[in-house]
Length: 169
Image (cartoon, rainbow, N blue to C red; front, side, top):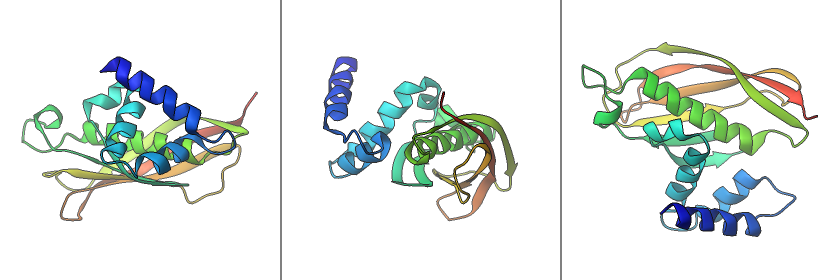
């Protein structure tokens, strides 16, 4: 399976425009293929393997916005049978990272600087993860708004991830 994914990634890289954004280009190409967004999500998780623990699947991606879903299952549940908030935070960091790679101007780079979250309701279903940027991309601190929702639309976690944005060297 690993060799198949590596071959697929290499073929995908060859087909992406050198002037476009590789994450957005991959999303645009793969969303047209049945299971394509699952493949894209798995590729992203391979770059940062700890995301595999929550297995998020990208459902929507555009500049400054990313949405994914994670399933409520035993591997992410806590002792009371709800989705553990740290698992949700892991998923929120995932959508923030995908959004950032799809949105940051080519002359800038980023590092996460901090995360502040509020737990506002029990997470007793599958979770929708959302990250959005509303400010201009520039050097300095940039706040990414993050939210997690239950299937019934109730917010379970909300907060901000602060990025440290600098010029590329």
